Length: 134
Ligand SMILES: CC(C)(COP(=O)(O)OP(=O)(O)OC[C@H]1O[C@@H](n2cnc3c(N)ncnc32)[C@H](O)[C@@H]1OP(=O)(O)O)[C@@H](O)C(=O)NCCC(=O)NCCS
Image (cartoon, rainbow, N blue to C red; front, side, top):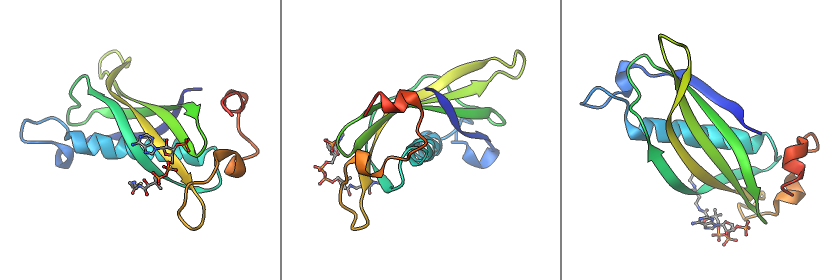
């Protein structure tokens, strides 16, 4: 199930010399949003192991309100894949359009920092759509 994991606004300090937001700014926010989505379903620590299919579709401008949606799409042994989609709200129509998307993979870790099976650390209050991925 797609959910909002992070929301914020782009400020002048987030812009590059062309006047649009730095790719690295939005990638860091996407990573944080994905980590929140993972923390919503497990009780352990987890780290990013890979980012794939990263697409910058449209620029983000100064003052834009940015909403980051996440959706857990696959659960492996110790890995969790998350679709991350960044949307900007149009100032005039208030409709959202997609500006960036990517697939993040996280790995759940035990206290020693070693990969641990997701099923051993899954939270009890997960939704039905997450249970279907287990
Ligand atoms: C994440 C980490 C602990 C994995 O260690 P590892 O020895 O590669 O572990 P494994 O080979 O057992 O792989 C663990 C899982 O990650 C997956 N994986 C490893 N490398 C991957 C990659 N490049 N892309 C996608 N998945 C990957 C494996 O397929 C495996 O998934 P599964 O358990 O669901 O089958 C280690 O690579 C690491 O510490 N990386 C640095 C993480 C980091 O600092 N991130 C940035 C800050 S959060």
